[in-house]
Image (cartoon, rainbow, N blue to C red; front, top):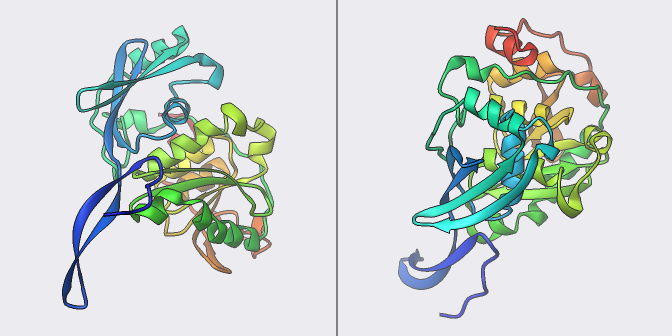
Length: 294
């Protein structure tokens, strides 16, 4: 059966569809999902289920957002090695990163819908987050970003099974996009792309834009955005209560249900030109995540 070639990260499969009561044989594009092991200086740290594209970005972004890499320069290189049942990303990292890894040593099996990937104790949830600068944005910019992002989602258009994370300029122009079957993975890939290769941006430039995601805004999505030094997160769906508390604690503008010209501001609404919200009393976990206090 003739069918257009799918984009990287997808493969064709023959399926049988039922249309108007009739069986129709057709080709369908499926998003790839493989176990990807992140190995730091020979130490296996995590195994995630991910789309096997932009894996060097994923390795760097995961290291940064998990707090294993203090800066991109601590990653010296990444080798992508196909092994039985999946892929190993073999990272060569600085001794300081290896020390952090040994302090937080754990091996996990990640899932595309996981919450706190790689965390095996409550203490590890409480990462130190930067206090983010206040960046003013227009509500129309967030709506424009969510609307235009669809045009960049090649994998989603082919498979209907992937999430996207994008860095957008203050006016809503979509700048850098990454896709994956996992929303956390897509954001990690984006963070890595902002730090390396032809799409790398300075920290000052990154801070002036915002992150746009095609999923809900969980605590971990807020934490990863903050660790990337981005002051605003725009989600197509709702945030969680802990995500809202954490956004308040670290100074992140959090907007959800960004659809068309509509949105819901959950923190720092005045930065969108809206009336100010009273800050809530943050939960203990959120306050610790922002300050690093036990």
